[in-house]
Length: 178
Image (cartoon, rainbow, N blue to C red; front, side):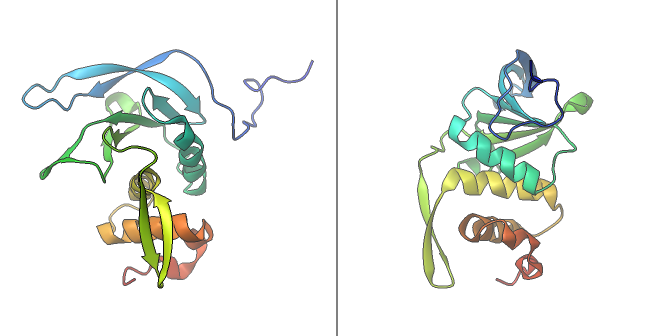
């Protein structure tokens, strides 16, 4: 009988773990900062996903975490309301460190649909990309490269989605001027 996936150290990229785990998530209700309990539905490596995260983006997130070398910390992806000082937004993720070393909670806006596409123009060429992938990659870049300008994250995320992961290794991709 061959080795099971659980007992080996090599995890296939398309493997999704199934076990019952719950997490306390800080609430976003105004004036009543209650914590909520959310069930972790999927786990891939150190990435955990709650109910509502589209299955089609799970592989994208896992590959992005591997490319950005963020495998040293647990990352929990959830859907919910993302608020800033401007109110409820749909083009940003919320990044929050959870208590007791549980990990980092990344909240994807609930109003953002996976199928929403936007058109980006890079060097006079139009590219069509998913807005959810752009927003999630922007959040992961914030964790991977802290203390950079906001434009840096959006520019790099757009270049990675349109030109590929080779942009991350290119030394000119970190130029904030573009």
